[in-house]
Image (tube, rainbow, N blue to C red; front, side, top):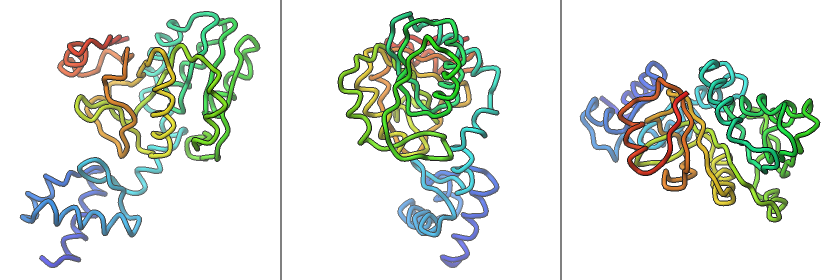
Length: 253
């Protein structure tokens, strides 16, 4: 098989399966992992695929995974339960951070009866949701508009937050992995989360069962930075047990 033929077959497999790994492709085509990485890099340079940790996904899939509209339609019931459980942890008077995840948006929808809470967020969707709650103050660091995630990105706006004591942070993730940590499909979003993780006294990860074991493009925090994971009852029991063994609280709702 020639190089163009192999790359054509790799692209076909990525589109059919939705996600491939370097190891599996190396075994399938009988070439080294170095060669497969070169193939994936060449396809990524043509914007045909997007490289991930140890593999690749289709280019159009990344757009879908970034899209808040798409993400908000996935695992709706589970996210609603997670949002309710997370909102119950927020006390009147708290300053909290909500990221751009669809699960963080589910938390915002549960804050109607909270009082004197300050929400710091770079999610314009969260801001829109909180417009109807007069007792919740909203702080938005500046940045550049990302339409797919309906958010503002860029570290330059984070200097606004230097005077804030953020009691609790709530972070969604594309994936939660025991070794790789918390990952996102957007390096820009991951960069902001990495900074905010360090400014929150308590770090809460809000992920549904489909996020366990997945790995996105960019890691924004190791599991050692997490105090609590809030997930649903379909989360894999073995992984939940492994995370609990590290001393992290896991709430399954």
